[in-house]
Image (cartoon, rainbow, N blue to C red; front, top):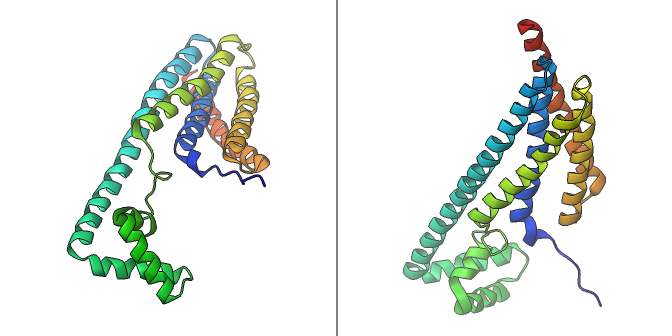
Amino acid sequence: MESEIHYINRSGWLRAAVLGANDGILSTTSLTIGVAAASVTREPILLAAVAGLVAGALSMAAGEYVSVSSQSDVESADLEREKMALRDMPQEELEELAEIYIKRGLNEKLARQVASELMAHDALEAHARDELGINEITQANPLTAAFASAVSFIIGGFLPLLVAIFAPLKDMIFYQYGFSIVFLAFSGILAAKAGGSNIPKAVLRICIWGTFAMAASALVGYIFGVQTA
């Protein structure tokens, strides 16, 4: 019998990669659309796309690193507190773990037996997993997350940059929007496949929100373009 496939172990880097790629596509496209709506030449559009690409990649990497590092710091602090509790109050911690298993459906005798055996094997691991919800799957690496986010942002942002370089200036906004929707849909498909989730739902979600973002950018560009014309 073939074993079932799970994808939760990919959640750390997959979240960073999907967020980076989608943000790269969407933010770079929105920038170029906004500038294209206010400009009659290609140079400002290209400058905005390149600047957005570089700044966005660095910002995503830094933000992801800080975010995941903060999460790791909180987890480490919780584990240290749990170590102290296990050292100073082992019986209370045993009762606490048994109570968790009782709430999950085990009878009192079995819950205490399970808690006792797990704590004898590795008390900190048992409490980290079942009391704090910390395990090897939920723990993400800050450097891995930052790298995945930055690289995926660059890949995503490079696509609208190519459109800004080669698309006709007259219809730049429409080309940017059309290609970005295709890029976002493709990104949604890849993310859904990698995560084993619903493909149409993922594609529809990113395309709808992407359309709102680009429409808002175009509106800002038109307003300021008219005022500075």
